Image (cartoon, rainbow, N blue to C red; front, top):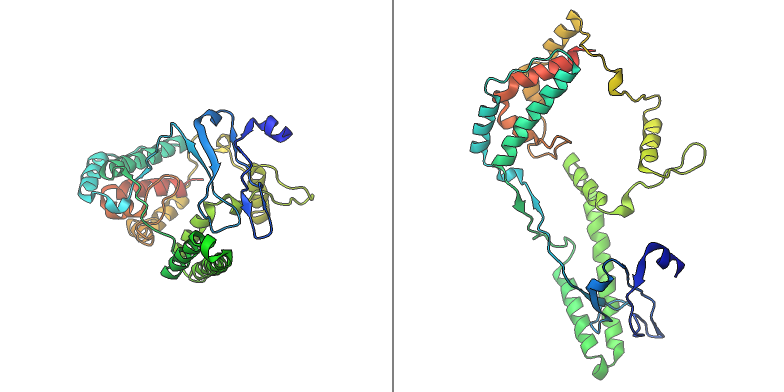
Length: 316
């Protein structure tokens, strides 16, 4: 009760209907909490008579003044490529940045990125998310067992509860087996970078798999995300030093040999080869640019891209 008072949480439980039922006992074990800010919006909180196929019963309530939020995203596979080509051609026509110092280089990179992303966003408008993919490990056998379990629950008064308990046990056993088999198959089939990336996205959606605490060399544990990153950097990249913007020179310091070496390595052919080595729809980086955006329209900004890479790698 002290915790609820200190966190401004209220208890929604009403009545004494049991929320936990087993063959030997039934109790009110589950509680429903909410903040006082929305407690007046929650009504009709009650324990449902519907069979949950678990030892715990469903706790239902109604939430008034709920507005649905439509998720929207851009699908690069649905891009209008003809429109994208026309927009990129217009934006990069006559564009040739003058780069004399690091700030000019950053401005040129930002401008180039903006040109590409503006064309992409116009050629690939936002669309509503439609979720049609079901649970991969669910199958018809589980559906039949669940249906049989619900029928046994509805007939428990005439046929007795033993048939229901047997049907529920069989369903829960098959459900756990299907979940484990599905997860095992997913993990064992990871044989490429794209599949590993997909697995990483699945794990990243759950807070249970996030790195929260690491043991430091002095025996203490990290207490923030910043300390976690510092610990990882010092462990995997010992001796690394942070470089701030104040450490960068105001002008490029570039010798003729280093510039000539950069120009000999960074050619239009090598840049195009590097871009084509990526999967077209590989997840973009922080700039949001998919590889296919660079691969399809390379001819329109290849000289700008080469200039940026030469200036970046030929200076020190």
